[in-house]
Image (cartoon, rainbow, N blue to C red; front, side):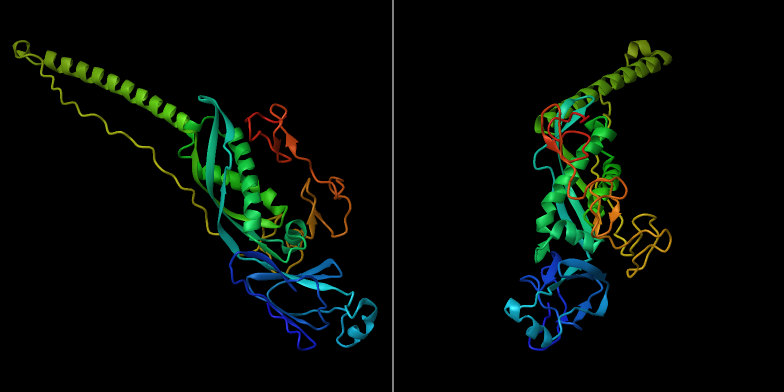
Length: 373
């Protein structure tokens, strides 16, 4: 932060010393009297959103920018006498940290229900890591930050974790038949889950840059049942092997001349096959791309562009419809695509079986695992 109150004009800038701040407001205590001609310094890893008289006017990329307000030094003080020398022309700058925030944790606080085709209803625990990045600073501030002066990853990590867990439950319910088939599919599950979550994150102006699954585990009793089933399978294979070896030995002995008095040359030192342990898998994701792309056609765009040069899609988003995701102008009361009134949010879905509350478009219940009709 760099405001100078000893001179008429301000130089406004901000440095993130903690490394965990997504958004930081200047002035920190609220709105202020940012003077006409104030200089705004924005770093390469930042974007600045200028609010004037309560409205977001524009987002500024990296560089030095001159702010234009109606607050003129000396004259403003004289005209603000009726308001106790406090100008009613209020302004503030929100700095959005555009870097990738890595190593955020997600996981099941309570086990999620999963209907396994072989094991029946089981409860699974899952946890991993994810990386996020602010891609629409105005939308992010308007939808999540609000009027908070500082907004950190700690304040959003728990909520995003719950969204990931809910979508994880829907994904495995639709794509996975049995937990026994899960090893070896961590990469595919992580990629499919990340693709499904892109819309959830984009509603808040966030991009999910990477998603990692560290482990998916059933309760101890289910693990014991799987181990017991594996042991039975091994013993069955050993029985088949011994029968095959015995048949081969009898065939060999019958083919040898004079072998009747010498007995059957069957050694007891059969070599047992090596036991194959379950391999461990870790999700791997490509490094996040720093080049901005159009959210509609995915073509590269410049950081300064307001519209996509390929498809004309609006790049600077002020708000989105919570129902269909349509980009909306700042003063829209109804969605131009689906007609939803913007002060009405989608209601959470309740499971008809157990009554548990789920996200608005959940497919499977987090508590009982039944499909929500």
